[in-house]
Image (cartoon, rainbow, N blue to C red; front, top):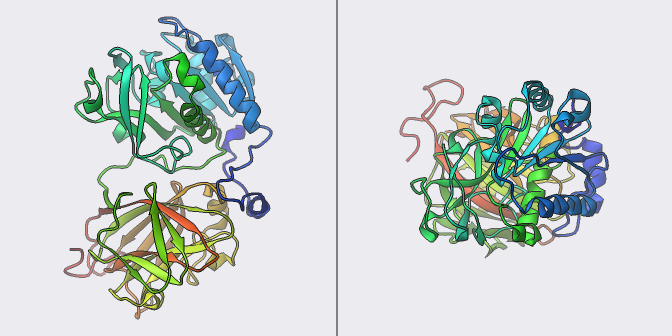
Length: 454
């Protein structure tokens, strides 16, 4: 198995990491064995920013603990050489850069868990190789002149975009693509075509995205044409996050995501209500718990069959949770007694730690540990409720599957909320969104009560 297939950390390693991750804003330590290959061969237009890009990746490796090799020798694309690397960065490659045998070796590398990072003109590469087109996510079509534009950040949990605000203003060469990758990849950021001239994608213009692809991981960013990009701290962090995702060092939910609507969009808590002591502060699109024990619950609507997604981050050994399936009440203990809590806690017992249905069912701990980012980094939950059936994904990996059999509780319809646990607990939340699902058949697992969602 390729080194990058070893995703995440073991339970023991996660506990050991906790001591180093207790400080707010701390970053996960990089595994010493990580090695990245920068490939910059061109058979078409050649960007004068290539030396700057290679130097930037080498600098990032030196600063963050991964080794970097750079080459334009396509002969490196063989099983033996590729096996040395956790990810390959296609840095503004252009045209047909690999022959048939080299392409086949790279396909094997990806299927064995290898990582791909495409930068800018990587989308202007290998038009006649369908595997590559799927891996990159989209092919280049055209571009207007270099100019300023606003990038709308759609995912502020992925390590490539978590450091950015909701809007990212920068100057670059903005590619139009032959197709929209949104249906097959997870879009992290998109261009606002109203803020510049020459966009041709009808107002839905992805710029950066990620995906799991045929056994491996892929990240692409359309930014990075100019020399100045590689001196820009925001872009360098963007590139670093993509590399960390591709190598498997950072976890993220990179499944395609469509059809969700915001319950909390980062600007307002309209529709939400605080129950009990403590509160949440709102800053930079983020709700952060303070005091407690209380609950910020979504009063505006009860939910029936639905997929709820949200991003969360601990600063250390903190405690919080996401409550589902409880009746309206100004008493936070009503959610405890009549609903279910999906726990967020770094170091408690198995049925009371991250990923558990609190006190009812532990997560699949090996799967949880493989998917979990440590304190200081963002994680994404998907909680899918269909009747009395609840499934939980952490950073795109399923870690719990629970069916309610308690007659005193019901998941079929109820409110959702996020907990502020206590004075010493600080947990942050972003981008709470929901997608209603079809009602489950009456009487079956996941059945929806008549008159279900509204």
